[in-house]
Image (tube, rainbow, N blue to C red; front, top):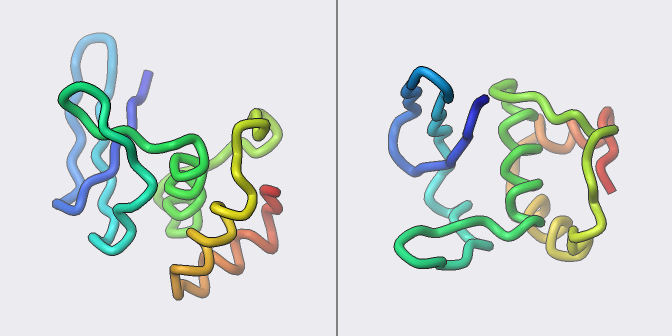
Amino acid sequence: MIVTSVTARKRRTMETRTKTFEYAHLAPHLFTGYIKEADYVIATPTKALFDAVYLAAKGARSVPVDELDLTAIDKKAFAGYCGAVRAPQLAEYLKAHPII
């Protein structure tokens, strides 16, 4: 099992006997759309989808689009996250892999 988190720090991978924890780098200006729960911060479903798609567009991950449950996704917020990024590879990825 792989658990992916995003960070403004350097990429890092830690392995245990049962899980792999990956920390993927995101630019600090992309750290929006999170809520605080107890002692940690967690992405909303829409922000989690954006982060996954953004990382896939950079070639760092893959997104099994046909396996996603998009019922909790705020399409307007998703479009806003995408519009806030000036990354040609994201636009190309979304053309090739329509999400919503």
